[in-house]
Amino acid sequence: MERMTAVVVVTHGNAGADMIHAAQSFLCKSIPQLAAVGIDPEDDRDAMGAKIDRAVAALGVSDNDDILFLVDLVGSTPARLCCMRFGTSGHVVTGVNMPMLLKLATADRTRGAVALGDELVATGTKSIHHE
Image (tube, rainbow, N blue to C red):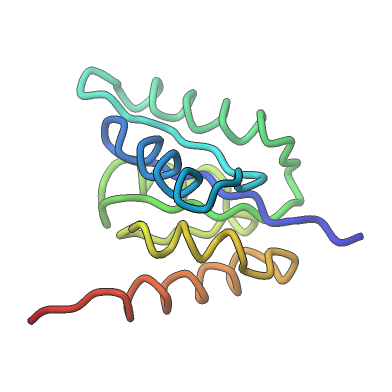
């Protein structure tokens, strides 16, 4: 059986954990291989990195496994840390939203982080409307 791409949602405050909870409540099921990291205002770079590392370790991700980071803000310190820490095995998507997390429940997570990220970006983007 192919390994499922692990996903870590990294946001400022509890937004990521709250969105995961809301998505799982809406779906009436848990989404596997998914973790949230909340970055607090007092967290320095080392504290942020340690939180991200703990979440990755808790998912059982090894150095050679694909991992997808869904981050709230492009260019933010958490987004940059995710990019730097996991090199070619990590893929970062910014602008995480609820439609992305709902799609995660049905997406094919065996195709790798890049393909999963592309699918979630497409879903998240087409779900944004302005009327």
